[in-house]
Length: 319
Image (tube, rainbow, N blue to C red; front, side):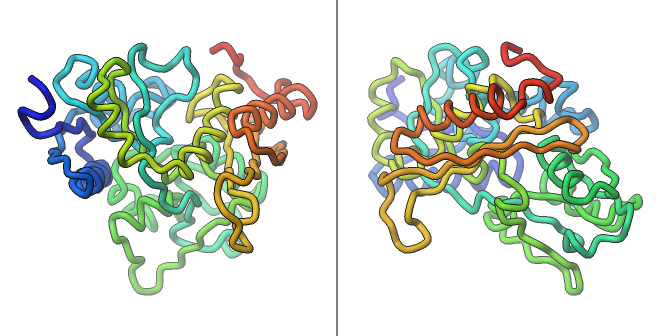
């Protein structure tokens, strides 16, 4: 059945945030004359909230079943948090392509329950992200950590429970779901200079079948070239490392001159990070350039080859 004979179907996870994202894409498509509807898909990552991500496959556990629905033809496209999509070709699904990066929210992380400098000595911080954990441990070696899974509401409910002082969340998720801290709860948005974001954090990505020219043309109408320019640079960085979201790496790209009103696509400033598993050593490197893909690869290669990053990591770039 053609996309024109029925609503354009968007496969998505069923979490509140995923539903918000799918509804947002429905609205964007409506603005270009395409009637779309979300199609909820159950994922392994959502079912197994009691198991650390690294034990059930890390990056990809929130997207595999959603991608399969599109590959089978049950849906026309899939809506993802771009940070959940593997960047390495070896980990990508054959025959699928990202047809649009329609928009990006705030890429920064948020500490909910306190301010980083004001956390008590030995405070317990909950996060399921190795990237967040190693950067916090590097800044505050006295902190202790516990794993964190579940949807946003479940995570935020951990503040003050089971000895947890604070949790780390994505600013974009809080903004999209309209979360406001309860009276008296301290919240600190962590600048990239303090906590480098996850690759593509805050961005939406819409995948479709590579050979579906009709759908690709539809998605091209809502693709944001400025967002794609930055996100693809960050993804090139991760792809060169060969890792996924459970690894202690991060990247953040900004357009050159953004602080003084500079235009997009006039160059990128990209900062990348790799770290040891314990956070004792966190390596960062920043470069600028106009070719985003080449820039992402260059930052990764510097950190691995010249800064000693390859010696810090307990993983193989081929894994």
